Amino acid sequence: MIEVQRAPAIPNPPSIPSNAPEHCPGVESELAGKTDACGGCANQEICASNKPKGPDPALPLIRDRMASVKHKILVLSGKGGVGKSTFTAQLGWAFAADETTQTGIMDVDICGPSIPTILGLTKEEIHSSASGWSPVFVQDNLCTMSVGFMLPSERDAVMWRGPKKNGLIAQFLKDVDWGDLDYLVIDTPPGTSDEHLSVVQYLKESGIDGAVLITTPQEVALQDVRREIDFCRKVGIRIIGLVENMAGFVCPGCKNTSQIFKPSSGGAKRLAEETGIELLGSIPLDPRIGKSADYGVSFLDEYPDSPATTAYLDIIDRISAILDA
Image 1 (cartoon, helix red, strand yellow):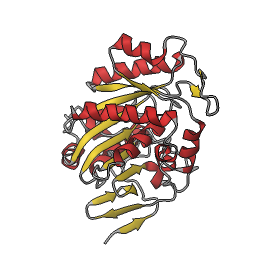
Image 2 (cartoon, rainbow, N blue to C red):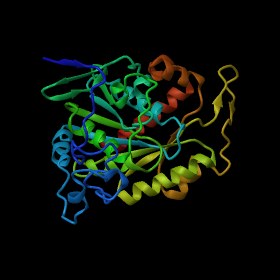
Image 3 (cartoon, rainbow, N blue to C red):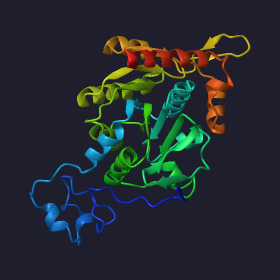
Image 4 (cartoon, rainbow, N blue to C red):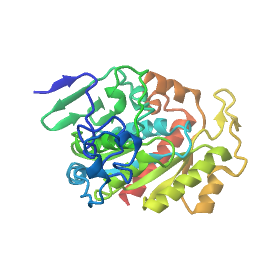
């Protein structure tokens, strides 16, 4: 029988003992037993010793769970506010437009989980069974998991240090009953920090098919995307390509295009040329994209005649072709 859970308590990750203090850095951390938070902990002496630590016990469980996922895609953006989560949702909806394709979206933006809102699932609850946590379904072949489903309200802040974030990501990968998926799209927070490193570490054995990098045309966004490119190359993640979001505004009346965010340094096109990365496409601004996200509906389905929809679908078709090549 399936049991409905309201805001389930999130247990400590395997690297944090059950009797550890609130801000335990984790027994695998180089700071184990050495931080102020470790003072008075019964495990401090053991953690501070130089005894070799074993492999993360979550890794074989993640490998087994991910064996039934065909493609794993990261959606990255060095800068916040460039439309990464919106693109993730549209990518998921587009994949799921084929009824024979099973798609999952994993939201690892722990402190800013927006996927439940964009997919229209803010009132949904998590279910659990003998096979693990069940993801929340948007439709029969599109499901998702997010920390947003675990919070008492949408206003509650998540104030966690790295180890607890890492532990929840591990649980999303090993404890959620994803089933057989053609695509698992992983929505990440801005930057190149804990969440990104955890996903790479946990999926090292299972394999990541690649990353899609989202940017906007202005230099202030491109600077952070260059850092994201460097991150991918250092950790060995294949870059599927760049997507330039908010690339001009097409007037719905006269159909003329205006550059709202001027590509002062050449935009994503020049960046792609400089780095040898494919520019998958550019998506123009359409105010209805934001409206669709607020109301939790698919922009692609609601506004099929929009130039932005055409751009989205061309980009998504290209991503599918690259993955299936």
